[in-house]
Image 1 (cartoon, one colour):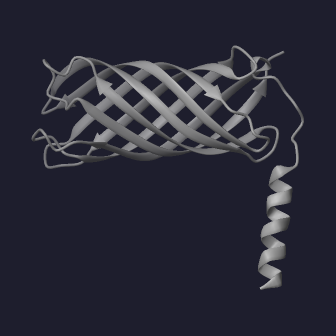
Image 2 (cartoon, rainbow, N blue to C red):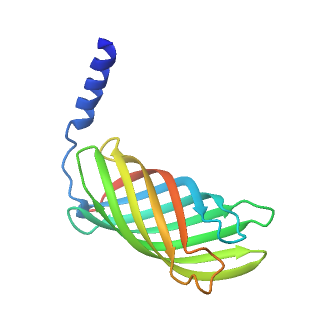
Length: 175
């Protein structure tokens, strides 16, 4: 039992050690994410899918950054739904040494294709996530985004979509 307590305490102390300070406005990040995409069952569309995303951003203050997001979602079914999203989001990072909670919001353009019928929509989203700073350069994290389809009254998409993904990223100095 002592070994377990000692190991957990050592890990907690290691995780709490400060990393070198670096202002977010002097950094850019690039990341790739893989996860789950889901939608409500209000329609005859498939509900569960795979989310793959790329992101790139830069700091605009000591805690704020702007990032672009490009994602592809495949909702598997006998007639699959392909959903591509491109968006821009503002992210607030509550930097707590190695663990960094993230809160953000953004606007997105959506392109859905089912049975070779394309459809364009607009959405707004919120972001909740957490990053773990492996070292000064590498980041692993997880995030959840909830999308509200603003053009839902004309769209076959339900009003709410969600993605949950694991992410790996790299930070680059831009000063």
